[in-house]
Image 1 (cartoon, rainbow over the protein chains, first blue to last red):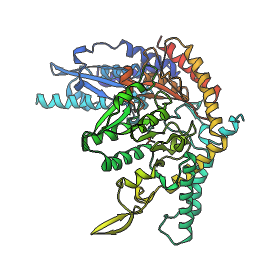
Image 2 (tube, chains in turn orange, purple; image 1 turned 135 degrees about the vertical axis):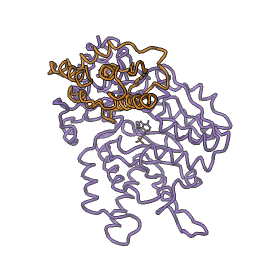
Image 3 (spheres, rainbow over the protein chains, first blue to last red; image 1 turned 180 degrees about the horizontal axis):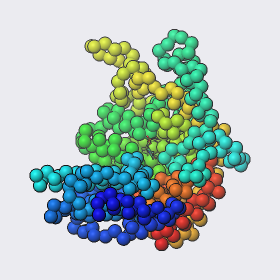
Length: 140
Length: 406
Ligand SMILES: Cc1ncc(COP(=O)(O)O)c(C=O)c1O
């Protein structure tokens, strides 16, 4: 599946919720289910410190694809982190650099990407792209 | 006298709105309080009736504006029961006032190795200016610890004070925990050793009557915006004997007597510390806020807020896994809590969806959060316009979120 196909799938999944409570319950569930972040990667240089919550992001290049693992101390943030990882992980640097993230807005969680929220998500997305740039440069 | 809350709420137009389709319940008053029409109108009047730069004009409007500004100073003087109006310096707020003291008092009185004492529950505004002095001047910052309830451990203060201590600077009331500190005791202990004391009153003036002469504090500072006044204005009270000796803070207009390239002489108090065109409309707004508070009566406000606090505390305490931070015997109307390990950001985000505004996070008091080893808390702080119905919604919201996290 392409990045856009996965984004569409997520939008589809979320479209069944017309109540914010249900949507957030689902997000919390996704957040709780996110695993795969290795404790050895819980390092200061993987830490994106928002004022409100923390996000850890680790990236590895294998066979030309970047694999991201991430974590957050706040579950709602972690839910969104899980979705971002699902969309972005296992892609080539070019795919990531050319992608446009549209799903967060479409599922009505855009407010969490506002810089004023200071939850680490905006910086995380920036960091995902920076890794892609760096790995691309390394490959060239 | 009991107060008429419905009448008071009408004074605050901002309260009458919905957030995500729910009526707004605003419990972030310790961060900033809303402004009554009396304050909004007073500021409006400055600009529609007599705006003019102050102290410099011979013309009518300038005189009216200067008078309003100086009347505001006298209002603050009486509000704090300061002996003299010229001991009241207008600043942008608490933060600037503390920076002024750190800078000017520091420049004049502090040398390498000298010590300043603060406490573990301070707002960053009463930590970082002193840390800058540590760097600049080589002074040493000492910290009064707190117990689990969030009370200052005064025995430790005795041990921290030494011949090197040049100033003690503590909050009157903790913004994160609500603890009312025994500042009179601290001041007396300090004065017994000739150590001056600065009090950060940012969380206090809106809740308790402050009398700087009875306290005998050397400095007392607060922000206008937390006492129903405008943002960008605050005040510093300082004893004349200190202010006169202290170096100016910033240079510019108003603060000078004569300027020449051979040398400049400084104006007298309070102007020496008010460089540039001051925020006179803010000062007028602050004066209106003080009038507003005085009209209702600080004791009445405090009594009502206590009632709200106790009501909320009792109901919150009944929620499973409730953890309170700050359980001091003497406490203002601030409740800091977590439910189990639910992250404050998660709690705050979901309460927001229900139209309930609380503060979450470290409350600019990270050393305090480190003391409790938590990422932050959820803080509900009450003001005179809050109601029990709003608190019921808060409780309902907290229960709902707790259940969501199972
Ligand atoms: C105890 C305390 N000190 C200082 C400040 C800083 O006040 P301001 O941001 O108005 O300068 C605050 C505000 O949150 C406070 O609560």
